[in-house]
Length: 349
Image (cartoon, rainbow, N blue to C red; front, side, top):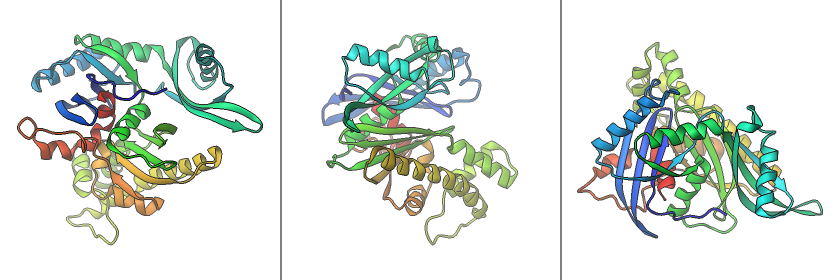
């Protein structure tokens, strides 16, 4: 069972583009932002050598005067595997072993290196048999150990290592009122990949990682303008995506077209995922889509996805029900890049 409301943890999300830290204080529906840190990463900092990453943490914590000990971190990296499984009802200890056995078939590395966990969806009928439906997560042990070592090197105590879909669920749960039987989707569009999750009745129902995100858009702009990555990134942010009936200004048509080409491929994968979810699990359609992640800050993105997918889309603000003290934080600036914080906020909650 997934337990919400693990208070007094600081959420840490180490992405391929930036590291994000969020600390929230308070309980229940009365929460406020206590600390926030955000720092860009370069390829050297995101390498397997954790010393530069540890230095980034020290600088970030000192600059923002973040005082914390217990943290929850999200596991990223190429070794993470997700699988939807149906298993007979059995004691929890036996279920763990059964999940591990099934996940051995899902990973490309040695089974001895596997660490895994799962979240239960519920009991369903498969033919005449009642079975347990669940989503399992598997990763390489050394990836988990490296993440823990990086945090311990800066005197932090990692008490929880989670996966992005579960952190997204915690964030969504805190900020929304659930409607019975309604399917919601949250799509975190990051730098190197996108994570699609479908929720229903406070449970994670489906998750899929899609290898299309912000970096591919930047590369498309670089090719279109024959420029470097820094210029392409700025132009991508400046131009965004064209809304319905809108025309580009300042030479932005080519940039918008380049970005749109990548987003069309991402939207096609999202559409296929929705169709698979409906057909494979005999579920209804997705009623609302919430977009988050750093790339969700692109202008016109919600309108673009809504037009292609035919589903209402919203740019998610994970801090909308969390008080942001104007005396401590530049509220407008925080809200501007809030979509990038959904996973980090979920970890802190």
